[in-house]
Image (cartoon, rainbow, N blue to C red; front, side):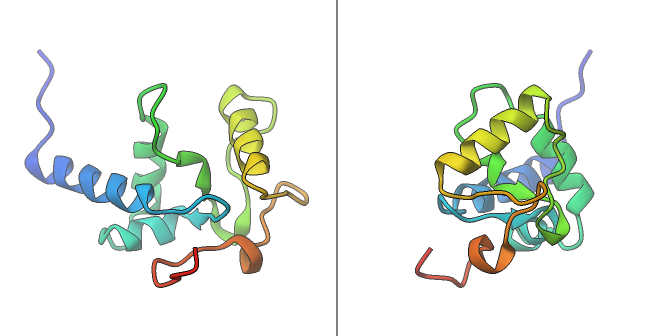
Length: 114
């Protein structure tokens, strides 16, 4: 019998998904930044694991979350990695050596211009 997620786990996921939904097109955040935006402290690894478990077809912009330093963590040639690269390119985010220019495309919730 599967256990129900604890209330705190459900609340953590809700906070994460809420913060993720606010990242505008054409911008990216790191796993660590997303954890902080969601009020989860230093939970970058938990964020990565949780995003990897999103249901197929989700409308949340998971592709806008990248590793520190602007690096893509999903390998090229994998279905998820190729989808992330395609979606970022469609939003005008171009990669150089599998990295995003964080000065141009990095986002902070305080940015009102997107």
